[in-house]
Length: 104
Image (cartoon, rainbow, N blue to C red; front, side):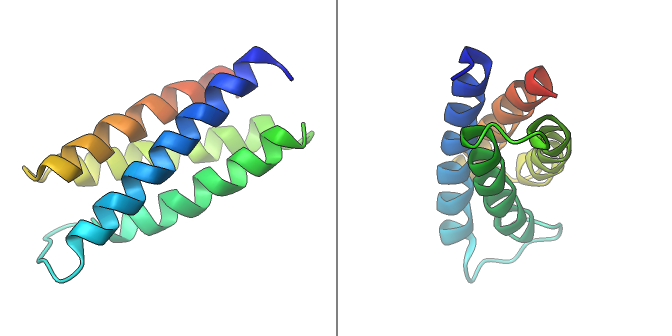
């Protein structure tokens, strides 16, 4: 497997985990923006991205572009909160966006 894919898969995995944690921590808390909804969507985006990269799909690069956009949106939303879990999610989302853009 392509080493760029490997680093992107790992970044997507970390992002998926941090988004899941952020979503779990935000349940029942007020949010003035799209957090935790963005986390739910980002989890799905990263999971699909991982699957396409592992399969070496001809659509992997195109999907990585979309995944990067979704991760940047989620980073923006979570970054507006001071919670430690939101800040960790923001960082993982930004790292994932960079890795996905390398593939795209």
